[in-house]
Amino acid sequence: MEHVTSIVSRLTDPLFDRNLSLVTFDNLQGNDLMQVLIDVFSSVDPNLKSIDKYARDKRQKERIIHLLTLLKFPDIPQNKHLYNEGIESFHYVHKPTIYSILNWVLSTHSKLVKRAYLANYLVPIEPPPAYLMQDEVLKHLTKEYRQAQEEFKTIHKIYEVEQSKNPKGWQKKDSR
Image (cartoon, rainbow, N blue to C red; front, side, top):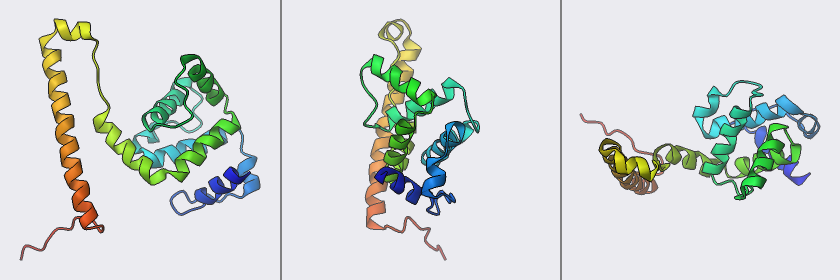
């Protein structure tokens, strides 16, 4: 019940602006509960706004599982069998699973927003070695991609250092 209280408290914050009480939240079922989860994920990664309202399609839910993996959700099992069971419990909107995810995402929201942003640029792409050995263009593109990722990391670190020096953000100077 402690997690539910925390979840409802965060969902009523201005970021989500949900008009929920403990009772109304706990009474949410199926697609309504999934929609809350999708809305929360959309605030972490705006790319997920393309998930249809009341998405029932297993592929849509697998996209969320993929994001949870990218964000390093601690309860995603490494064992393939357990992972598949997790997808199934997620597919059937198992309340304890959804509550666990919501609690984690809401309690680490700002960190996850940053992680999701960085994941857009830093997710490694690993073509199968057999293709790399046969295709020089693919080999060259893969090398360029990795170099671009390293350049992005360097630039992002510089940006973070500058941000820490000026927490209000970079402001354009008046050139008059």
